[in-house]
Amino acid sequence: MTLKYLLDENVDPLYALQLRRLNPDLVIRVIGEPATPPKGTLDPEILCWCEENNFILVTNNRTSMPVHLGASQTCRTDKLLDKTRKLRLSKLNPPHKIDK
Image (cartoon, rainbow, N blue to C red):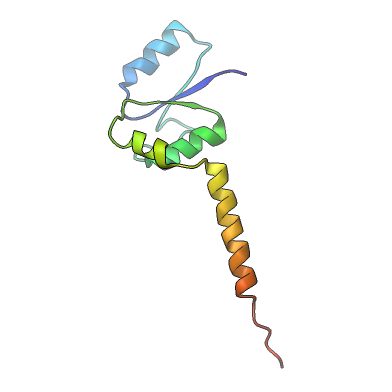
């Protein structure tokens, strides 16, 4: 399995340039490039994108990212919980039949 890296907005773009120059076989992506989250994407969404796309996040964000890492469940777990909640709600509030 090839390791893939996503550099966020808190990492100097020079790192991506130099890593690509020194080792062209590395998979390096930067936030805002095609097929990556756009600049300004919230930390939890970046973490989910990395999980879903099998990327390792490289960041210099020491303020909010540790909070999100410590508090987050995996994105797959979040999606499963959302589906479970919707299913429970649909069972509690079944659609009403209208008699004609």
